[in-house]
Image 1 (cartoon, rainbow, N blue to C red):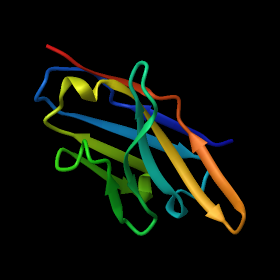
Image 2: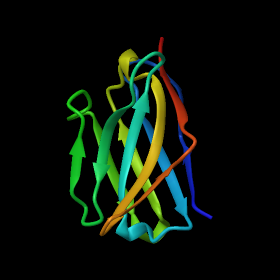
Image 3: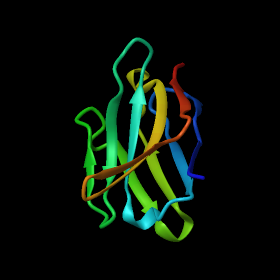
Amino acid sequence: QVQLVESGGGLVQPGGSLRLSCLASGIAFNRYTMNWYRQAAGMQRELVASITSGGYTNYGDSVKGRFTISRDNAKNTVYLQMTSLKPEDTAVYSCNAKWQVTVTLNNYWGQGTQVTVSS
């Protein structure tokens, strides 16, 4: 059974930092591209950051220079370090694992964790 379990969300003041974690089980973690998405109330879900199995990273324009994605394959965990947080970063952050094998897309989601940036 595949599980992606996020943790680390919460309430933080503007300018503060949080680190999100996503622990994966039931998958060959080191083969997957791991992604963080977020969805604010009334908004479409957007890609925040991704990291490939080879460690290549990509970021959404709104978080470049402030967020850092990393992975620890030994711990089956992907992290999102968020700094200089802004109220507009408030959203539910979800972990996603994706691996395409020929025509088969393996695509799994966590339940999400709430991040609220407010004074």
